[in-house]
Image 1: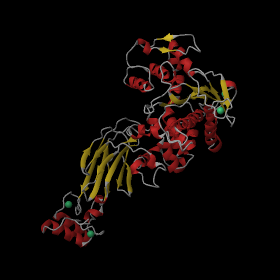
Image 2 (image 1 turned 180 degrees about the horizontal axis):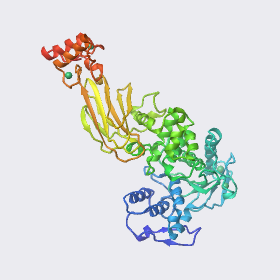
Image 3 (image 1 turned 90 degrees about the vertical axis):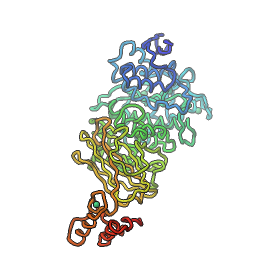
Image 4 (image 1 turned 135 degrees about the horizontal axis):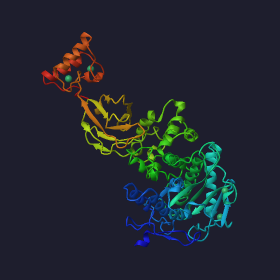
Length: 563
Ligand SMILES: [Ca+2]
Ligand SMILES: [Ca+2]
Ligand SMILES: [Ca+2]
Ligand SMILES: [Ca+2]
């Protein structure tokens, strides 16, 4: 078994070195899911950071240990190894000599016998026809260039055209003739990932930009299914060219691992901007939608691919160039500050609009309303409900998984037979800044109430005639950037019709209160006037006092009994 835990250097490029870096029995290393087991082992403290990076490189790039065929479509494969490459480069000096020797075989520029220039002339695509990196030899146009290589040229040219020509992003810095000339280099590789972008070297710009080159999977067999009419293999290939080339563009602005969450969110978004027919990004949306309590700005796991919804929301709600403004600002700012800067034309910041984003994410899948919120809302997954109640009234609801900074919960109440006025209250911890939204729905309406919490005060919503609707979704949201797993109390109550003085019972006091209001200039019914409309005729007058008196003293029907 020990042999299974040894990582082997590529013998083609390096002297035969077998480095038994690890002798533990944490896990095997024979499937792409190892990447996640390694991550889990690191998160639980079983292995250190450098060891994690070395093992993850092995799980993706080492043909001895990785599953290069990717034969199980249901098994998630790592989408992009770009963040891993960035982390290895950033931490290079922390690796041992042996680790550096091992890593060098995988993080350096590959060498391939053949190359092909893309029709647009911007990309040089390198490939092999034998050995573990071999591409499929299909050549339907009989020009002696494997068709998959030609397709890479077309797809990457499309990405170039969208990002550089049409949207005006910075072109990735020239690479000093590496790979044969100044064209951007792409290598077909045997890897357990769709692709990876390798930061190459820093330029002399005033900001931290990097030249780069790209590795993409050698055949795209066995990836998750997608919607491409040309088939899943071609769809995965297209998505990868858009995704990884956008990473190359991002590296023209900044090479900072702290930005990885936004890099992945935007690169995954760009898959559907360049190739809207593919929808491979939908395969990753549930990592966010099943985990809305994890911070938008989380750099771990697949969550950051699922958050392609964030740039989608920004581009659809505000304007299509907001992502570009963000990357322009990221040269001199953190990702969140760069976003704030990109919103400047609208005089808002992330904290002001994050609650709006949370309820856009509620109206997807079967909850989508035609013409509202996301363009593709009906095709999306549905957001996870943290707690779901079959009835409306519940006091002191505490979350199962409280939200991190820039995250939220969804708590849903079915209205069932309740009628009256809804009172929905959020009392969040005073450590972080909260916002609160409530979605009041039936099949046709999407009433949303939303407000930030002021100075640690509770947020309370009142809404009349709640019995007319089917459900209420409460969305407690942390709009502070940081702090994990925040807790709160949430209460959903029903104020009965006729409770004009809001003491939660209907009795003679309400009749007195109404008469005082109607005839003596006394206060309006509280907390909203509908509590006093005891006959539900849409106004407050003596008839309401009569209804209350009949109900309390004469066994008459309860207020608004006909509604
Ligand atoms: Ca061909
Ligand atoms: Ca080059
Ligand atoms: Ca009362
Ligand atoms: Ca009335």
